[in-house]
Image (cartoon, rainbow, N blue to C red; front, top):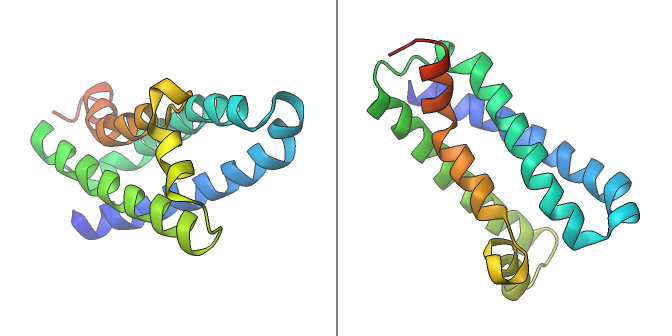
Length: 130
């Protein structure tokens, strides 16, 4: 189950990279960076839920707790990826990374991470797996 969950996370990460590129190239110019990031939390969450919908049966969590374990794995991997990729590739300041998670500053990424965490559980429940 863990190997399959990691493979699916790689698909999610690749999809989110493409999603981010499209956000910067298409949406930022129209609505500005901050608003584009807020919109992208919704579209990215839908993307994650769609991937989870199609892949959770293949991952095979046999219970809600196993689905939450998959979600926890995805969450930890994505947080590490977001922070490391942002810092090492794009040289994003810590304050900028923190702003993406800070509701007071318009950051909604925490909601996206919550969706990532519960996506396997939601998908499994909706597909009647447990």
